[in-house]
Length: 611
Ligand code: F6R
Image: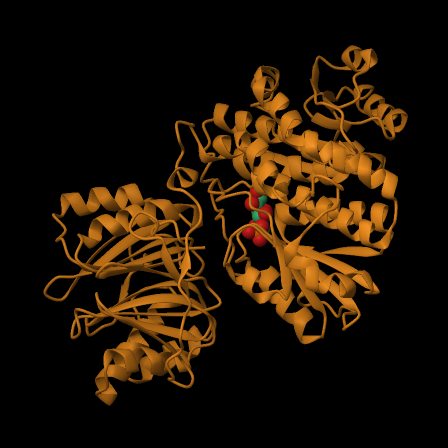
């Protein structure tokens, strides 16, 4: 949440910042702002999107500079208006700062400042930090770097910050604790940002800052130090591996649509090199050294949030079925605060697309502190969760920009299947079933492609339901998590209230909602067909409208509903991937037809780095 960019070099910093903020807008789009060095610090801030900021800068003839910072906000403390937008200046006007995270002790810092005659102007937690930096600097007569470091020692909370000081206009200082920051190392220039997307245009060389580190740079040199001890630390230079077109819309109307259509490729990428051709064995390098511990553990807990949690639920079904080991699935936000029974005999699988979700990260830290082995199933290479876990498997879905997760989900389910197969193979369990599953995994990209080459029917269904106010999604077994995911997709991008339920649970409550205005999406497969058919009849006999997604093509389904969407048949462990895709397309088309902003739904941000 919140995207930040800082630039120091020889280019026009406005350009680098505007391009970077546009790329980071998925992290928040409540307000945007820019601050640059130009005979003191100049800045413009606007409520709204980065495009509004660019317009405002054009109107004001905002000066060009070679040193600047920018911010796109997802509001936590304070409504999204110009005043609360970043960057924030201190009262002396010497410092300006952009921040991603939350300063938890901001009230006590605000009081301390107030006692010393410094009043904050905004409602944000961020402003207290820049005011504190200014206060310490002016009082103690120390350098820019020292003032930032001293202020950070007083701060409790999470931050990724970039700071400028008008007394040292050729320097940029940044620091990280709990919110991501990546440094791009260019020729006579540095770009610091919340992720690599603002950097890739200028350089592929990057350094991941770690928690508790402060970066000081001019256009030619940089140093990274430990905040608490003030000792320089050496950093490894990594390389950005993805290509520029992976983070562009490439002709699609929305990133979400592009990412839906990328799924044959992203799923293939998740499997690439991991199924050994001649013997059908699974190879996951990231787990090799820990497989013995994983297989000998008493208990597996899968933890995640949102869509990743839904993938985890499917993963738990697959592991229990193929490996016969007990698996619990926990929301990371609950796990981190609950009195869980976790110890050295527990293995935690943490699933995250962004690798930055605050609750998931905290759950991992808790599990580690209790002695558990932690395994990351992550998309974003080099992210905090990827680095915090003891070992893991990247899903390799490629950058996901649309706020509603699509291709990451199907890749997560693919990788969870690979992990379960590997575990079953090593345990010599269910070998026949596993080899059937491996055969079907190899057919998976092709079958996904079949769904995506003909989406006309789904688009037609979407047209019928744009005025619906509620939706129910029902499925059994492996299709229950799909029902949850279908409902989440619809509500987050179309603002239609939707609930996912196990189909059999309907009669324990939700059935009371059924009337002629309630569309109910049933996910129907061969397993449990008769049972779910009865559930469908329970709905139609009460006047409910039924949409059927099915891999089990039966004439009677067409007699029940004129909205039947067929998907190919495949092994039940990976069938959720095929049944989810029409639900992604349905949600996308309903939202698009309603005129909703599909890629930037209200109140949401892609990377949830606050609690
Ligand atoms: C829904 C969605 C969210 C995320 C959740 C976890 O479409 O994207 O529910 O799945 O915020 O995010 P990650 O996977 O980045 O940890």
